[in-house]
Length: 358
Image (cartoon, rainbow, N blue to C red; front, side, top):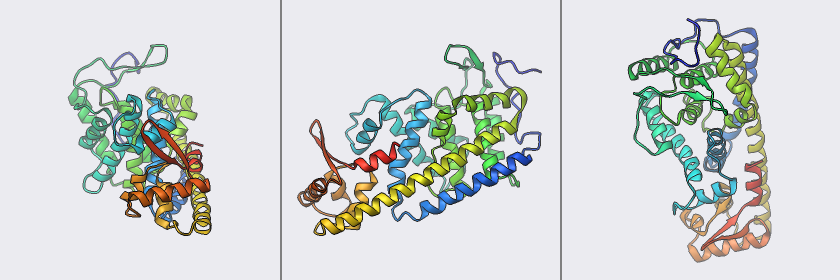
């Protein structure tokens, strides 16, 4: 039966795909993507404090993944809100921050649990901050920007759960398929099942990162796949559509492998620049302000673009008055910039901020 975008795709084929996935072109691209990803993993492992990477870099993935769903915030609003615990951020900024919370939830869960439907649900619930489960009622359809239906996912809770169980089996199956190819297939299948009323896209993109960590291809989820999806939006949606309509897996696999290679290289270059920036600042503070210098203090101001006095206190470096003095010295050096928003004072690491949003 021919695919009909207006009818629920209950005939979505189960996994694994009934074709040979590892064509010559796909294998060649997989080798290249795996090499660059391994370089990134090795570099990230050399950063003494992984919080420097995860706290700030992962927020960019959160922002960009949310932007795909038209959840838009500025970098300044995002990082300032992340530095605060008062909950005063606007609704879009809060939702972006919840994306990172959902990613952390998944990372923690992986220590004791497999990637499975119940975890998918928990991640989606954390993003949306509402209790819900697998879709049980019909009426879900994906539309383009002019309101035309482009895809109608499967309907019926039993059908959806059957396909999710099949996806779980594929994810954890004992086979020789390259993990990056498995991630690409997993991503298509999750998006095609579209198991929730909302939050599917962001949940699916979190699952990509969790899968890479689970398979040992990354130790921390520092990969900007959403950046590539935004820059190549037409190719992303065209690739999904072609798998659905004509089972064109090769085009989709090549797209996803290029996404991994490109974003892994971008992140590798960025981490190198941030590491070099940290070292320059460390040397300068040690040279020009030896009385306030400590390795821990430099790490604190690179953990987040917006540093507050309390961050220095919480790190156990100094009590509040002394911590304030330390940050003022760094501001006088030009390493940080004092900034007030309402009653709150921040010390902004502009060089780090500029690097993160580049």
